[in-house]
Image (cartoon, rainbow, N blue to C red; front, side, top):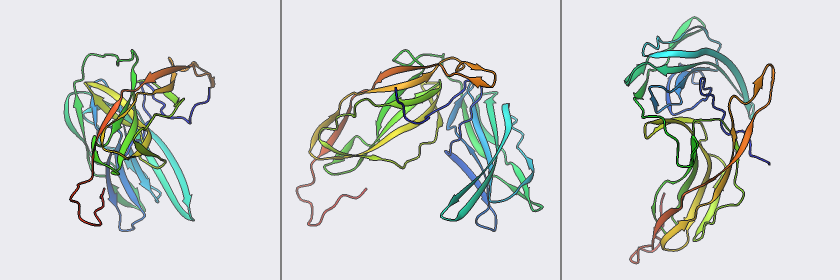
Length: 286
């Protein structure tokens, strides 16, 4: 079975997910040099893990000094990496130092500034605040697995012709290698356009006391063509779920992947007619 490109690769003990939710940066006098801290977590449970990354762009740094992480245990790190990107002749370089952390207690905690030297001058990131919640007793989702998919509209009420964004969002505690939609949903009453560019970074979220890695797999722009309560019927998605440790053995390894069907819930959008007394030239603005 053919699956789309790699979506999520999550290890229970060590995350290597890079999100951009919380970004704190220090920009030097040269606008193309940036030293920033970022994390993939809005919230994290007490027994959960999350990633913090410190990145230096367009400079060679030395004497990197991380914060103390006094309220967290360091599960892995620092993991260092470097990259270079060339777009239209413009070269961007980046050095990164990543840490996988686990909280030690509940509350809101500040991860302090990291420091690095560039040409003998010290630069620091801004602090990041992370909220740690106790979490609930481990439970399974409605499909009996540790993952589920939600179809999330950005709004549930709109006028005829007004854009409604629709996200296909994955929530998972296990590794998902890919996904496939055997048959496109029926968007009766809507004109639908699939968007190719959107923020698809993996993000840690706490749902009902459980920590999930979440990712928007697909985003659709819908334009209602008629007034009334319009329904997007449930439809099936197939997920390629990696089982166990993926059969890792030595340098070479074989991934044990099974195909799982998941059926989404129906979504209802309340579409209102355009105002009858709208002035001439009236247009909707989004």
